[in-house]
Length: 402
Image 1 (cartoon, helix red, strand yellow):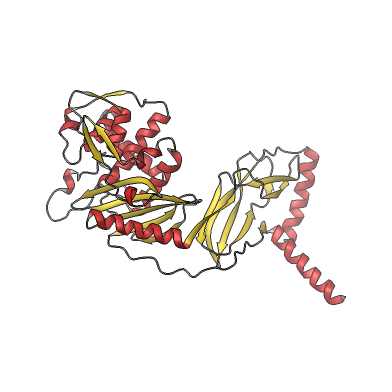
Image 2 (spheres, rainbow, N blue to C red; image 1 turned 60 degrees about the vertical axis):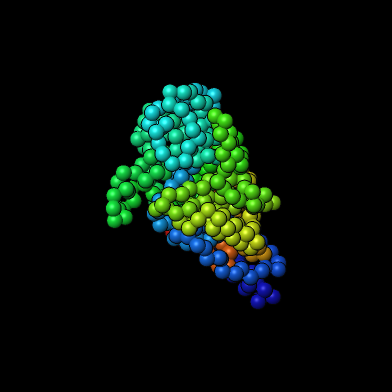
């Protein structure tokens, strides 16, 4: 009996210490029959990355933050801004855009718009995404911002907002700027990275859901000229539904692709491959590896109460805490994970709804794989003067003994 009491006291003491420190340990989530995970494939390219789209977890990465020429992958940002402008009501899909001589004269891939003619915003987006039209990109940029140079500033602002820390745009097309066309391989002034392009693709998929179907179209006809989407995976893998290819001499052959199977969506990025067929084959390797060995776990929907935090000097003694956005993780199939809740302590009223009041840590195999803010799911106003005074006294003595 004495041994039992000693163990009970020790357990209670540890629990009290953890509660006082603001830590709450959630139950571990074991999954039986975990399978071994082989090393990821090594690809023929300069850089690559595989991301679980829903969670944002990076599954595979090689030179993911190296600044490289993105070529026509630049047009992902051009189209992204175009759809944001539509969704914000600042332009309309059927707005007529007059084609400038600059847009018409631009070399490289085209949708073959004619100078002085008017083209709808919708057609320009088709021309940018499916046909990779440089002429369409400049026409849309000029319609939105007045000039391509000003539009490039919008592109860089959007990149900064998305956390694309190794990206800088000089134009809307991805064609080499004049500063990059001198001899002896000068430093890049227009660049991005595999990680940044995955972040952009993720934003396009989830923020532009009404427009994302455009990236899966295999061909588009404009002015009597039918052109095919250069993303070969759209023909080879029915789970692939976008996004875009790119190529210049300096950039090599590049591809950002996304595919969805069951509840898992992956984003694969490859930069600097040697030809069109190789880039498709190498990205297919990434996607196959990801779907074979990883899975998305949907943990908590936004607004679900995960715990109740002790509230001081409030009208109530507790406030519900949860995540502000749906929370998912990606793990090797069969892996176990655990959740640990760390609450801000002391938490003193008033608290606004949506205010950060803690952090949820998710670990697997002893490693932190994701952290998410815990927010108050309800407003918590101050309590009465007497109640605040009493809580102040309790906090004072708690501080002395803890």
